[in-house]
Image 1 (cartoon, rainbow, N blue to C red):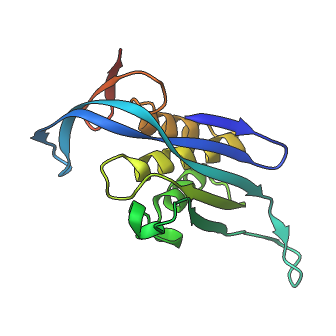
Image 2 (cartoon, one colour; image 1 turned 45 degrees about the vertical axis):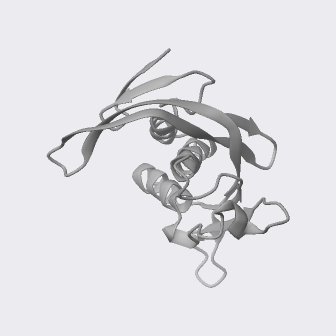
Length: 182
């Protein structure tokens, strides 16, 4: 994952990944399954543009108002259109993992500013390339950097450091909680 900070926004490249090997292990007490996988990042990336929106004064009450998270998704695709690349079914608004990740990080940290998010999709959805989880991890990192939240960065790093962040192979076990990079 590559993060660039400018004066007005954060720009984060969220890489796709390939599972070279994937095994479903025991079922956990929370209903999820442990997994073990060997994955590597590839050069195909989505791009997340993140702008922090400071709290504004409400004209009628003079109180600080809570700004919303504004989300837009644009698909980068060729002449065949979005359907040709599997980009037509990316969820909007609060259904999108990017928005949910920023909302979660800010709620946990007690941050009530807004944000403008633009996601440029290049990774086809439902293609097994980890685009959604990579985008969510990028959003957690962005929220953490913008709000100076170590928790957001940690949550994002945990999700993405699992092999997508570095140009190395990564072996993961237990839902990404324990991993070894080689």
